[in-house]
Length: 392
Length: 242
Image (tube, rainbow over all chains, first blue to last red; front, side):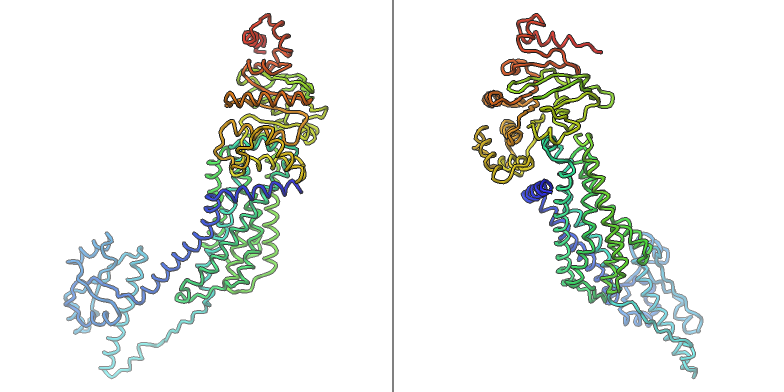
């Protein structure tokens, strides 16, 4: 135990003095995460706000043919601008992306309207282009509304109640809570926490194996009257401490950052108070051991510092995979998922942030299984550290 | 006292050591001499227990290096080839770290580190971080690190590599001092003159086998050559390819 402690303290001091590495490990994760997060959130806020408020400029062919229609569109914040010369040019422009949508109003429009023949307009858009689709939908909705309005006027003029045209009145009731909506975006948080946690210990994990070998300090160390188990345990313990520190920093920086993000504008009220922050730390803590052992294990297979860095950047991405798959398939928390490290933490964090009840059995399984995998990997690490091949 | 008995060690198809045996008694300096790639380092690595021999045995003060490697390591100080330091620790901290790992308590560590720093004349840079040390400074600190727990057996793998004249001289003085205090010193080199100037016994290794294991005079006699360099060359030719 004393030996483990000596190694632990030495690694802490050694890493603490390596200012540049320390800065990149402890600043990259905790600061980059919230920054990127804020950027994404702001972008999505801007996007959703601009959809409603921004004036949509709609290229129109044949503006003169339907002045009333255009006035109506203008009242719904859709301004007509001069479109391409003809229908072919319009299709061309949309295909090449010069315009997102073009409205074509044929010359007969006014006559058809007057003769109560269904008057034809054409809306050219590329449905595969999601951005254009949103604009097209806005124009389409406005056109339908104009259609309804005209129909109502015609019926009234003939003494018929326009309400006949509305046998059904649809009222949509959205039951998603404000916290629930925020979970979609805040689900990204779990990955940032895992990323920051791993980053915090990455350099130490490399240093303990590949670095020490490359420097030539490994052989003298191994010729000392201490067991290799003691050495590797001390190194993993030091790695864990830095990872815990990095996790703390990134939790706090998120706690602060979330207060500055205009989340209410998106109808979000994430449940991320001090109690949840603390709970999140405890929830992710078992992952620290797993990550430290995993990184040490991977680094001990490599021949050099550079190679270790390359492989560990793969390790940094690995925990995202289960999170990504679950997000794409929008799976709900299930008992089986709680056995998978990183995924279980992600699902439980999402529940907490959504302010939904957290299943304590799920928490127990998540903690125990993550600790189990961590201990297993630590054991494998210690075994590998006993190999002769360690010397390279 | 170090005893090596018929050790073999292969790395895949390369048979690095093929039955090396020799004794290195206390109070004497034993040189392990041989051309590059002869198996000197592999032999020493078996002795300081980072490699296990495929067959044969070796012991330090009668303690088997495989069976009881922890106790064997307690009784020796090793300077592996190309030893590196922790660049963010000072020279003194590098030495103290090893001292503590050797089981010395805090008060002992300070005393011993002070002693060894004085002995190896590294006071000038003892409190500087070892990043940017010259090769000579690094070797001195590595040596201090290996000797800090006052081991009975000292194993040095090409200690004079990259040292200038002055540093080599002080290294030689140190090795003689260790001998005079009754230590067992085993060091490897590929430089004939260096070994001849220091060693009581020389074990010439070539192609993983012992060519000659004798005193300097014995080697001269057996090879029939007064000139040591010539004797070295002839000894190496004694070893067949199998």
